[in-house]
Length: 468
Image 1 (cartoon, rainbow, N blue to C red):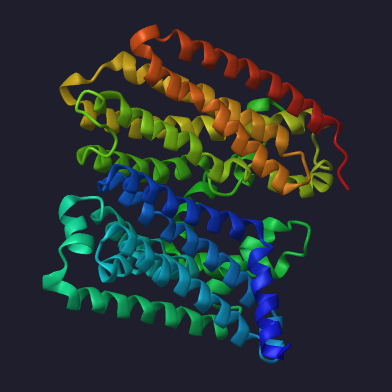
Image 2: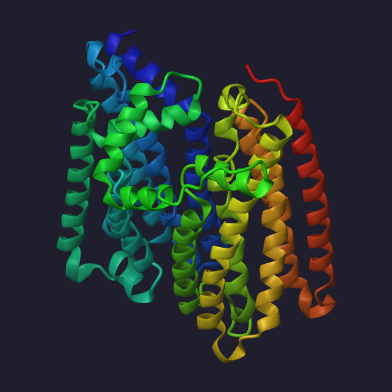
């Protein structure tokens, strides 16, 4: 076999053997094929299905950027001759397939404008790639605007349906998007330690392997935070409130240990709440969350809370689990092991409580805008309490699974728990008209009982665990 072809094969295997890449590709194909089947069966273009078709673009872009940054943010990228060519070739091939060929195929099947669909896809994917590589959240706004515009009638007409008068603009968008991707690929080949993409990859590797030496990584992380003024301001404000340890009381210990969790849950909940509330209100305005005006009263609120419950998975495994490798040293602190374990569990619970509280601020905004004169306080309170039961159960699951050394096992256990414990949110909305609040209330009570049992199991597991 030709040496370059063998290199291409080996590079391709790094994508095919990574489970996150396979999951991303599977999600991409599922979200493309499923709407096609729905549309072909109904012989009608559904705005919701069109939204699903465009949705995989940002997620797949994030997966590819993470994988590419990890490959190039290493000494071998500079030391091995001919390292860049096969890696860039494979990346280019994947991008051509998902950003060019797939949109062309989908547009042909649905009789949409092929150039417009390609322009929409690249308008979503290219800014997402640069935002993930440079760790610049502001660039994601371009992707969100492009995606959100396709959900409106005028936006769908501009991108996909009636493009005869502005095809030149669509071609410019395609060329500009590919120019951004080409600039990203060129930058990957010149990646250095002092660059943001390199630092982001090092942080990602550190989260996957906390046992490795991190002195150099810590220096790079500090250098990156200096570039992000908002993150620096947020961390300085948080650390200025660092409490003074006075006694061994649970509240004081939990408050002190809470500062070891990195990004605080209330900050994460604030950003998630703003994003989810804006998306929910936007989709409710264009009737994407209901098939009739009477259903919108509850569907928008349920959709927001469901996204909040599922969104908690982003930080569920980042509270206790990263501290596990350090427990062997931290147990030398002047605390009894029972106090130390109870303090960590209490700190974790307070993080989840803060996330739920901030999430409910967005819930009030969603209910106020979507329900208006039909706003029923008992409805909002009931949904909020049901979501609290679901989040408490997922929190308890994360406490228990955090002691497991295998990250894949923790990830899938948390996903399964989120799927199970989010059912009361749906049960209340679907069954309250016939059965009242009883089914969802019973499910919430069961969730709380299971959560209490899981907390007890987690407390016992952390107390007897061996840490080297």
